[in-house]
Structures are given as C-alpha cells and as structure tokens.
Image 1 (cartoon, one colour):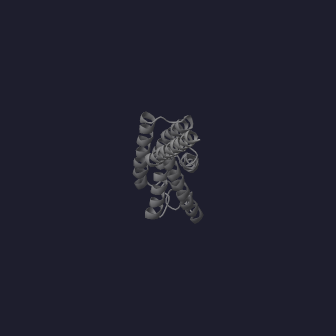
Image 2 (cartoon, one colour):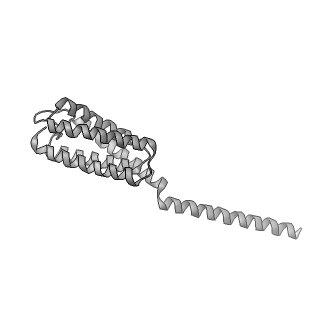
Length: 172
C-alpha cells in the first residue's frame, strides 16, 4: 500500500470502529449483529497490524473480508450496521473514482479493482439502500402511527357495527 494512502485507511477504519463500538454500547443488538461487529473489530485489529507492517498477503485476505462483511450486513437486523456498511461502500466508490485505484493496493496493482466489480458494487449499493429503506419503514414512527390509526379505525367500525346490531335488536 502506498504510504500516502495509509493515513486515509487508518482514519476510515478508526471512524468505522468508533461507530461500531458506540453501537455495542448504546444499542440493544441481536446476537448475530453483535457477532458481526465483534468479527469486524477483530479483523480491524489485524488490519491495523497488516497495514503498519506492510503485510500484503494479509491485507489481500482482509480485502476479501470487507466484501463478505458488507454483503452479510444485508441479512442483519440492525439498520445502523446496514447504514455503516452503506457508508463504507460509498466511501470506497468515491475513493475509486478520486484516486483511480483501490487505495489498499500498491501502485500498479489492480487487485479488487475492475469494471465488473464497479458495476456489482453499484448494484449492491442500490440493493442495500432499498433494504435499509424497508428496514426503516418497518420500524419508523410513521408506520407505528399508521398501525395505531388503523387499529383505532377498526375499533370504531366495530363499535358502530355493535351499536347498529344492538339498535336493530331493540326494534324487533
């Protein structure tokens, strides 16, 4: 990895770590969500070491794991983990465009950097965004208000029907 990119990688990884640790502290997470976070944090410790010591093979393995963790986030419950994964995908795509390379590579290497991968990542960005939208709509205050409104409406309809039946019985 080029020296000028190491600082970007350190800062980005550190920002992700802060958000993940805050999630662990402040959110009630499902077991699988916690496992995902602990696994990512463990990989980040190894990643810091690999970048510092310039362990290319280890960085390449962790490079693959980035994609696996991001893909796996699609199946987790936490909307926050999904949002963090989406943030990372967008930053990676921005860096690909701005730097014209994957910053985890040495100059002249193309590992993890191709047109096909760009198209797949754009597609997955859309899929993850839609998944976040669906996750949010299931838990959103607006959806809860709609459910309450529907329950009230159904209750009122039942009261009216019951009142009408009672009034008809009294007439007979």
